[in-house]
Image (cartoon, rainbow, N blue to C red; front, side, top):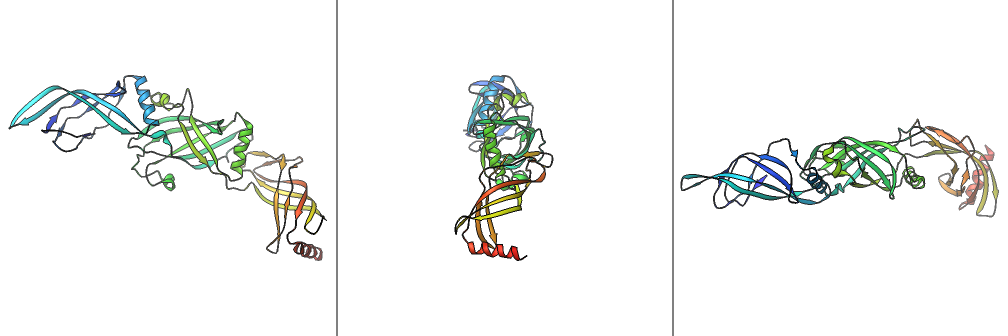
Length: 364
């Protein structure tokens, strides 16, 4: 706490019980220790840790909600002060002087800078899509919250509900000038707080969920948000009301683990169409690994493949299967392979290489 604009004399300020207010409503009180203040300078006072008792829950909820969502806000400290000053060597004490100060606070600004440090679906089961993720939240404030309890969020994509996650034992204990948590350093050297979340996906709209999962499996980015649940956002009543509806927006990077790990020809019959095109009836073995983990089952109903074929380091054709129904057995658990029958349209930019490749295969 800084006491400034002390004129014309310095003085001794006795200990005070100060009422804390927001929007002209009192919601608690704090003890300020005695201090000596000097004229014409900033006087810094360290307020020791103490229990803050909320006296008006509605006023506190408004204050805490503003603290979380606003860039700045004001709170007000009001009391009656007793001061002792010296004038011409004489000590004089005055009691009951009004002490009423508004203080600007740098707040959390909606926690707008949120980054997903890790996202893992590999612990899923045949019955549940299990999420484990770590996020990094930048604190733009000098205020820290060392205990937030368990936080409850809904995950949303394109406005559609996807499922719930819980952040157990959450805290924001790195202020903006503090060194970031170790796992968050790549997002910024200071002010970034790590938070782990676990939960399940049980989407309300499966078409939107399919789009999200497709983006993730194909390595593409998706814009998602975590919205604090209502009417129960926090296991601690102190922050529950203030957190409800808080919306944390972020980007989910796609999984870089390949879904398709290989393709083998079981059989193939090539039929020329003209000098640049051909068709091929084939039975392909497609090798897959399930990004949802070794215990999860992945059922494949259709395959649509674009394939480049090369020989001796050169592209000899590009092929497209179009949507092809995958016959049973069409389920992979962890890792496995499926046989896919298809008729493929080939484009042959280097027909001579195809002839060489066929001749070479025939000679062997």
